[in-house]
Length: 370
Image 1 (cartoon, rainbow, N blue to C red):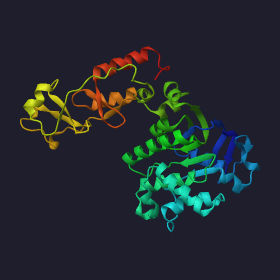
Image 2: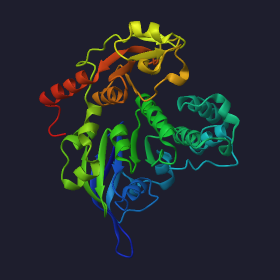
Image 3: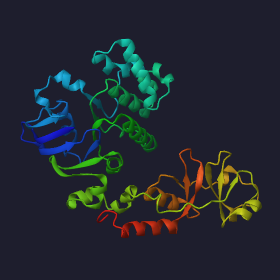
Image 4: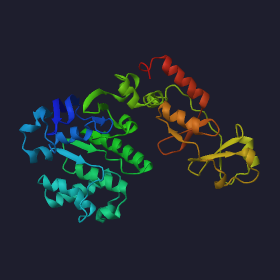
């Protein structure tokens, strides 16, 4: 557990970066610091490992005040991941990862073995081990940065906007990989982000800070969306918080998945029309994975890849109502496509059924006023 007790950071010019901050980051959970520029997110994070010294108050790691700890020992307890990974350019990937293990006193051979194992845990092939940072993409560098922070098996992890320097697709992949990794390792983590969607997706609890370093609210993502403390929090979370709240409502128990007729590429449009429910037919590959929809009113010959409408998104079987609603809204047919963990087609759901499930969940009292 990481505890802030009345922590303040005041600079010599009188500027207050963090003002009387008190909160608890639970053991084995992810706490996210979020807020506008100048709210003290990064300053608060850096006071934990004493990169910045608090002016007053105390920070405790599992009950031990950090100001009483030896600085080197303190930092060995903490993994630290920054925005651009900060890899050593003269070391290859495995050597980069092994550095924190070596600093903890682990023998070189064992440290390199740990580094190789962590490569796979963060989703990189062992073949990346001999590459240098300049040979990696931004997303790959961030994965290496996370692995390096984990190599010393720290009790705590601090992450300062670790996924903000990559494109949206890679960012989503990194977030999913990070959540999978955290389910395995269960570290006590504090992360800084400026992205409220990232905070709601990754955080077990979210701390919203005002400009000037004042804590506005700390709560679970669900509570933050359903019951913001005041107008500042409500505005920061955003006007579409009702839609975001759907991410926390399970759809599996309230929606029946229908059988969806499918055809393969190359099928004649006339034959596809015989099995289709309407003008739209779903095309799948040989592994029964959805490829896209085809508008049969526009086709007369064999169905080709260039005929596919790719606007529809997919929802997984352990879906939330937000995923399913998006799938149904984005599908040109109005039927959201549901897949299993291997992206194999499980069936579809109608938009009208999703809307009815939302109304039912809301009527059942899903959490206040989303």
